[in-house]
Image (cartoon, rainbow, N blue to C red; front, side, top):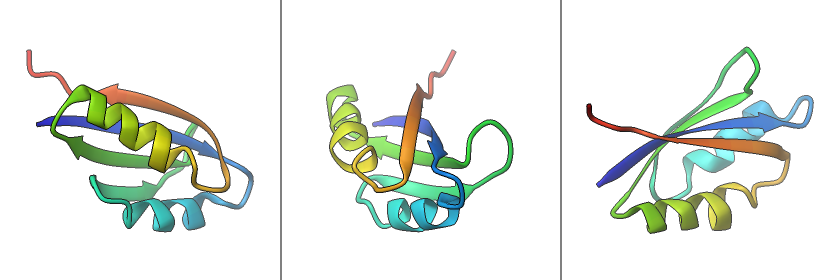
Length: 77
């Protein structure tokens, strides 16, 4: 299982709506609006890195109001 944090920037005033919509996407384990340089932080899981990439590109980035994403896979050192 591959886990990642997805840091999301949104259009002004869209953070809460984006977080709520993404929370319903299969593979998303949590979605919260935050303050700082990013507006929403998502925790996601997938069986493989390829499936994680498909989740981000095909599902998350298609949510209206998102301007940029940064995917940070979790590593165990």
